[in-house]
Length: 322
Ligand code: PEP
Ligand code: MG
Image 1 (tube, protein in one colour):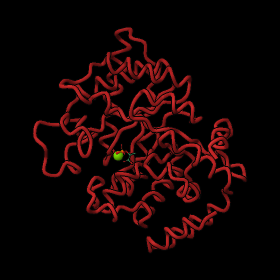
Image 2: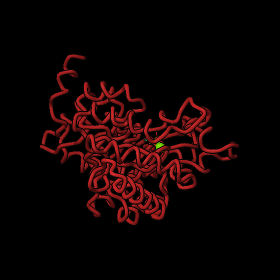
Image 3: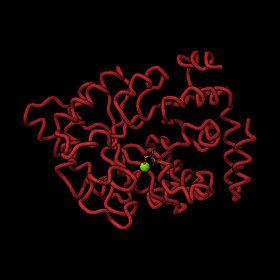
């Protein structure tokens, strides 16, 4: 019952055969920080920064962004906070990213593409993050990366901003925080081995990865029944990406909706995932699931699932695993 789930808060997320899993939280608003601590998350694996830009006619200043990020970081009391830079466009914050709405916003000037086209917006956000990083461990996460050049360009911008802040005497960490990328474009997943060479970590965004892999608009009700992260194409992309990260020795997490669904935990663990980031409210049930499974079983299970190509059969296998 509920009390058993609450008691889980202080127990580790570890399988019956001793494999530890890092459970992190996704937040969309700073007010969620309390729930993150209450759920016993090890940190924030995805801070969606769009809220900073919403419901206002102008861009937030560096100082405004710094103040908000600092408050979240301080409330997390030394736990890692993964700040995703603005993911404008597509299904999010369409008014910020341009004057006219493109015909195909999901494939248009969004996220990192938009930021690289608006360097003053990117630099103000990076400056705010770097300044806030003095108050606790921070990682920078870049959404919708498809090309190595995009992550290189963001890193160069971060280095420039870092040098400028240091020269001004503004307190910033001695070195840049880790800069990682969302893997949420199928092409990025297929090029994960190349992207791993220029990224400090990966976070798989299975919401967009599913949308783009299956060509299903994630906001379109008429095709919602076809939206399926258990489609073998999506699973193969997750599997390949995870292997590429493990071979390159960089951390990898899953932060799409499936990370918060206990049904998916055995499959993701079996593929090699050791970090999941989810809505705080989902965390206790995922932890409970992990504490009841053996990692050795999940490896054999993942191999079995990966050999299947019927999505219905895969769903049945996932539901049968106990
Ligand atoms: C995702 O795409 O899976 C993801 C975590 O990001 P968002 O839902 O914010 O697009
Ligand atoms: Mg996404």
